[in-house]
Length: 245
Image 1: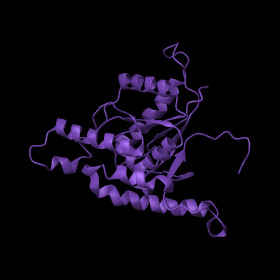
Image 2: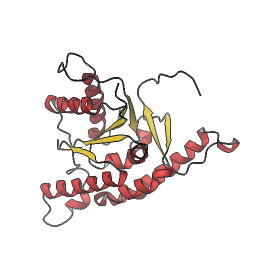
Image 3: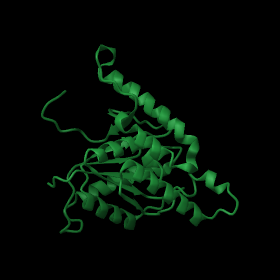
Image 4: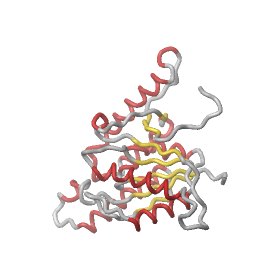
C-alpha cells in the first residue's frame, strides 16, 4: 500500500462538501492529507435560488458562479484538487458512464477514507442517490475484474456527513471530529457560498452543537476534552482495531 495519505469527498452539489465536511477537509489537509473533492453537479437548478432571482440569469451563468464559489471554498480549506462532473441536479443524472468515471477517480486517488451523504433524504433525493452511487463506485473499484491492470481499491471507510434536517434522515452519528483548530478555515469557506447565505449561521450552529456532543462523549464534566466546534459522521463499515479505547 502507498504511504501517501489521501481522502475523497463525493458531493452531490457544489456546496455540500463545505457545509458538511469542510472542517474534516481542512483538518486533514493541514495534517498532510491530499483531499480530493468531486462535485457531481453545481446545484445549479435546485440550490441556487438567490442567483435565479437576478434579472437575466441563465443556466450557464449560474453554473459559472457556483463553480467559482466552490473553487474559492476549496482553496480556503487548503484543497487544490476539486473536480466537477456537471451531471445536472434535481435530479442528478447518473449512469454507467459516470459510474466508471468515478471508479477511475477512486482508483487514482486510492483514498484512505471517503465522505458522502446520508443514506436517506426524502427532502433531496440527489443526496441519497449520491451515497448509493458512492457505495456502488467503491464496490466496483475493489473488483479485480474491472479494468484489469488498474490498481484496485482496498477497503476505505465511508463516512456519511450530517444531512440538513437530521431528525428526518435516519442518520445516527457515531464519530465526532474536533474541528476547532480549523474553524476559521471552514467559516471562510462557508462565506464563499454567496448563493446560499441563508445557511451560513445554520451550519455554524450545527458545529457548535456537535462540539457540545464531542465534549460530552469525551468525558464531559468529569474531565473530557474541550471542543468548541465539531462535525459528526456516521461510519458505514466496521473498524478494524488492535486495541479498544
